[in-house]
Amino acid sequence: MQKETDDHEYFMRLALTEAKRAYDLGEVPIGAVVVAPDGQVIGRGHNMRESRGDPTAHAEMMAIQRAAAQRHHWRLHGCRLYVTIEPCMMCAGAIQLSRIAHVFYGAVNPKGGALGSSGNAYAFDRLNHYPVVSSGILTPLCGKIVQDFFREKRQRYRARCTDATCGEMSEWSKELASKASSP
Ligand SMILES: [Zn+2]
View 1 (cartoon, helix red, strand yellow):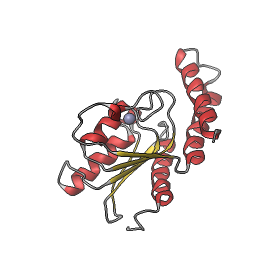
View 2: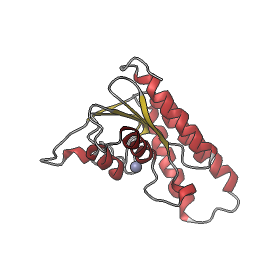
View 3: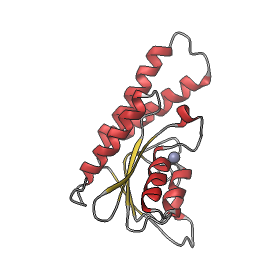
View 4: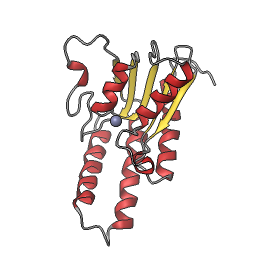
C-alpha cells in the first residue's frame, strides 16, 4: 500500500501495529517498517528476541532484512525506517550499513539508545554514509505500549520474581515514562 511519503505519523502507526504483534507474543513491544522513496512499505518487523532465541532479532533488523530481500539488494538507498523506540547500537549500525537515508523514532531508549540517549552511533568520523535522524513521532503512544507491557509483566510475575531482571525492567520503564512525558 502506498501513502503520501511525508505522512510520518501514518508510517509510525504501522510500526506501532508491529509493536502490538510483539506484545501479543510476550516480546518487548517494539516495531519497525522500512518505506521506499515512493511511499511503499517494503519491510516490516517486530522484536522476536525471545521467540527466536536470537539476541539480534530486533524490530529494525527484521524490517531491514525483509526490505533487502524484497529489493534483492542490501542497499536501501533513499529508504526511510520508522521504529517505535530509539535504536540500539546494533540497529543503528545496521541502518547505517544498509544506507537507509532517514530514521524516525518514537520514544527515546534511556537504556542504550544509540541515537542520542546513551551515545550517538553517527558521531563516528569518516563513515561513508550518515542517516538523517528525526524523533518525536507519536512519542507518547510508542512509549506507552512498552510501559504497559512491563507493568503487566510486573503484575503477573511480582509474586515469583526474585531475580534482578524485574528491577532492571522496572527502572527502564520508569525512565522511559519520564522521558516520554517531558516536552
Ligand atoms: Zn536494536
